[in-house]
Image (cartoon, rainbow, N blue to C red; front, side):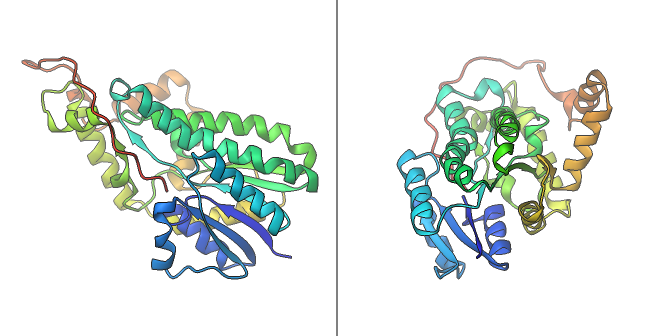
Amino acid sequence: MAQTVLVTGASTGLGLAIARALMARNYRVVLTARPASMHRFADLGIVEGPRVWLRPLDVTVAEQRVAVIDEIERSLGGLDVLVNNAGVSVRSVVEHVTEDIRKRQIDINFRSPMELTRLALPGMRARRRGRIVNISSVGGMMAMPTMAVYSASKFALEGACEALWYEVRPWNIHVSLVAPGFINSDGFEKVWLTPMGEAAIDTPSSPYHRHYIHMRGFIGQIMKRVPSTPERVARTVVRVIERRRPPLRVPATFDAWLFAWIRRLLPRRIYHAALYWSLPGVRSWGPRPGMVEGRRGVVRAEEPEVR
């Protein structure tokens, strides 16, 4: 009998690539997206059938999480693999992240996948098997300027999943963190800038103006040049699902492997100093003659789009 796999955020980007990779193999897939994004499946030619279920799911809504897991348990005999892919990236320096934005980022990238995991575990324990695959990031093992709250959400996910790896081994449940680095896509253009971050980009006198400008250009160039694609990362996810004993942490791109080894081999003092001085235009960051610093009013942000 085909295994049942739930993939969140499956209507675009990496989630869509994972969905297609699984659909090409002998799996029964439950693909979810926000209610407002469900039309994308039809636009992409993905329709329901015996091996494909499409379900609306805003991962931050408790009732929707419960409904999806309960339906799978009742109608499909249980969930074999949970792929927590849905996520969003907030781009901002720490000083420009207000509490409501911080909570929203953590809610989507950390609390929601852990809640889905919590709901899936009783059935997996009863059947004494299961797989939890969480899409993490290089940002979950190293932080970059202007991505503080995003890294915080991924660091939290990594820590909780490491504990979970120990907790559920007695029931033959495997937990893995798949960590992509830079992917050749337009994903960085879809990050959510905070209102104060947007203002800093548009204001050359802002203390953080050059932080944003240099990091945006640097990361944008890298994402256009790297060979890694969503399809390559999706194949890594499928290999993790199919391994008899998958590892806890799986770097999914070359740069993810590279940074993992650099972090492991270099003393922390040298590691942080080397990364700092390699940041783009870092010598021009900070105070400049004639620059006036001050507080800016906070503007309510639009809701970010969740994959």
